[in-house]
Length: 182
Ligand SMILES: [Zn+2]
Image 1 (cartoon, protein in one colour):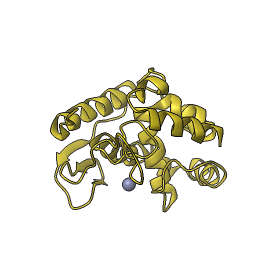
Image 2 (tube, rainbow, N blue to C red):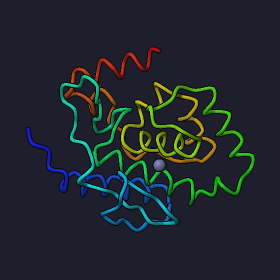
Image 3 (cartoon, rainbow, N blue to C red):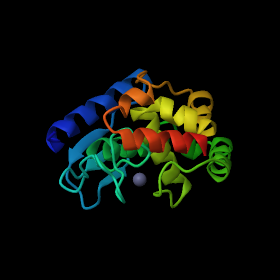
Image 4 (cartoon, helix red, strand yellow):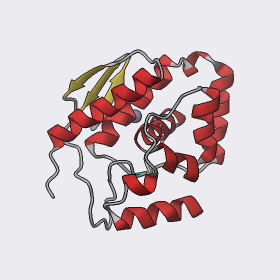
């Protein structure tokens, strides 16, 4: 099975646009090319297709997979940067009470991935999973799912169950179930 990064970037872009439109969030500008995996600044999402990972089909140390909790494929990168955009557009930044609630939630809930150095990145990682695989977020980290759906009134745009989204990779299926049970 070959993985076409450019094609995947187009699909990832469309998934993010679907999500943002469903939620009435102004679209960011999307641009290919930046130093890091991805970057976000005031309405501009940048992403680096060349640096993005291909899905790990037989993972040992690198577990990136579209819709999995670790996802540095181009799907995960673009959805993560859209997460920063959601924070910016939903003005959590200007709402001290919401901000405080989110900081508390990040302290008391499971992390999505190893990349959560601060609550901004926790929010981007959580949003990434909410955009690409919402039922996995709901079952594994309900506290974070509830913040997005209740506090921010966001709606998921994908209704496929996570077992279907990860169905082509038995190792990810098992790992996701273990993560839920943790
Ligand atoms: Zn980030």
